[in-house]
Length: 319
Length: 319
Image: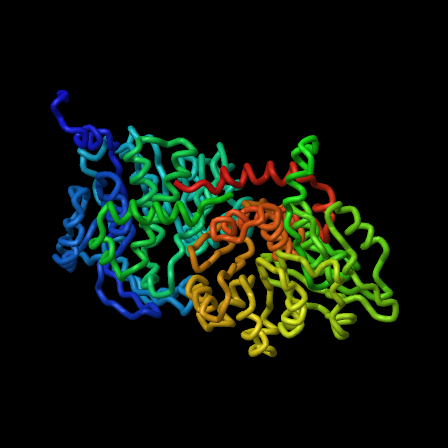
């Protein structure tokens, strides 16, 4: 690098490599705001879109022959997303999910799940991705998550999401995975399910004893809690009006994307930085709620996120 | 005042007069932590104990001939509580309440309610209290709250608590009261009940249209929201471990006491000060949870509150 190179180049090259593994889905969603069929969804889509406002992000996932070209175009419209690790399987079907949210949007029911490519081998990890340092393992079988993790020997921060299904049917594999993770992301009910403890602080402390350095407990409209070996942080949700909450699908993945994207951009893994990252995750995810699919995230710029972060800091000031 | 008077005297005399009207109760409480019978409770008790760490507080309530001397001693043990407005009615019964909390502590059922003095005339307001400037109307019939409010012509800030019962059976009186209030405190479900709107932000905005300048929506373990004509604030709850939450009874009143006590001590009524007051309310109330009745609040000092405020600021730092 020469002294004549502009400052933004330096900033760019300092971004540490961030990768997400998980699903690309074709979603059908009913909410009190309306209904959509066949929109782009899945943990990788929401995570990558959210992370891309903060740092370049690599995607490892598989799609089938039915994957709409329109969905690829949406992901391509985010400048910072690398799709080299997105495997196209012409003879398979893309993972499809249908769900319906109840009136209060905190609860939903699954209408259908077509596993498609998820019922096949996990996608290969491109050699060019092996140097990834910030790794997010989107929700899938913990055995698959552990396999994927093995592809990133240079990882500095590995965080995984999980769900009630794996806590039930793959408990031992999940416990084995936990020993290899820096962080686990899960929601309030899942934290209780994994530990038998309703209090999320106490539940998170029990999970730390299972291996990870930190746990984020996501509470949806009530924000999130971070329990880390070095401290505790609490963050409220961004205060959204009724008309702003169109579809909660993917909000947890967008939260993780904003959080990991910030950490990769700062190249930090310490408690204080993860606490700051919670706020970036909250603000980035608040946009994901404002439309079905990724629509709202395709409309905004980094300036919109910065502006909302300013408003969030003001609203959440304590003391 | 002479220049030889110490600084703390000046600070003390700047405290504006704070008053609370409401109930003194004899509580019977079952929680997952245990069971107590006949402990001191009621909105005035919790509010006044919490407020007293911040400012002198006056109490307007009535008790019956069965009121235990032990309960009076507990209130007297707080230096800043004036009981001149506590009316003793030898031939009446003190309000008694029994309740049982479920495993998750967010829900409870009422086991019994003996109205006692609450079924009689409201207590008289001592003439010496008429100059009160910061007024908190604890939960009771909104018609009684409006009557009490009339005794404080110099009020600078009047805030009332309410409950589902009055929203149902005294809707018109509640609407009339709202036009005279600066602030309304209510919980998440009550905000929905009053407005038909589940989203607490939107519900609070609808309540502002009914008259008050601000609304605080209390969410228990998920914190609180402040919607004010001049801005919005969100505050998480103090992150408590399972073993620290012994009894949630009175936490909302202790929250209000900490909040109003701070505002009276600062002699402020603007949005930014109310936002700061939310944090003091949160921290003060966090101690009330740690025991049945007022036990924990009788043990602590202002230094304990200040220390916890410091920890809360660190945990709730955003961005």
